[in-house]
Amino acid sequence: MIQVKNVTKYFDDFKVLDDFSLNVKKGTIYGLVGPNGAGKTTIINHINGVLKPDSGGIVIDGASVYENEKIKENVLSIADDWFYYSTYTVKQMMHFYRDIYPSFSTERYEAIKGILKIDEKRQIRKLSKGMKKQVAFALVLSAMPKVLILDEPLDGLDPVMRKQILNLVIADVNDREMTVLVSSHNLRELEDICDHVGLLHKGGILFSKDLDDVKLG
View: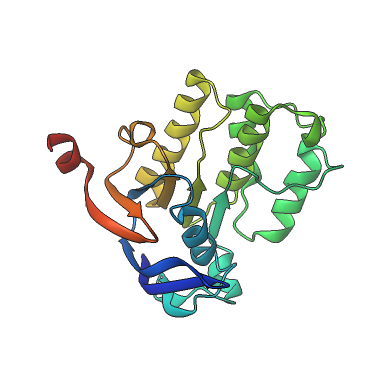
């Protein structure tokens, strides 16, 4: 589903990604683990199609992702600094997502809104970090993506809310074969949900294994 092939990226003279390769199978959850500065966000921005590699390429569902609008309609992400319009209420942002993403399900949004107890009349900028993250998950999951990319997704969430949101993500993986790439600096945050894990070190994958193998090791 996601194939990253020998991607190298420089920022000025600094090599951020060094011959980076990764393969994420359809309907699985892949955890990308590494310390801050290891290149996690940079590779995610390549997979999102935001950045163009200096060499190598990224293919999603058989097609190159960079400047591919059709692919990007089905690849959504949530970062720690998730984007929203500063004056928008939750409901206004929902309308924005509904207009942008053809697969957006209002029925799904209403269901998740109820589960997470989201007040859609509130301005997003006035919400706590945890509430903003809940809104992000409600909107992104309602867009019914084929690929979901999460960059440090659990920051700001209390344990109960983490469990609820992760259950929603896992349900989409099981029911729709959604493919998930999730990054974190903490393996413990991922070990209950991931099928595979890759350790990122100095811009490349140090190893990639089934999570059960990592636990046994």
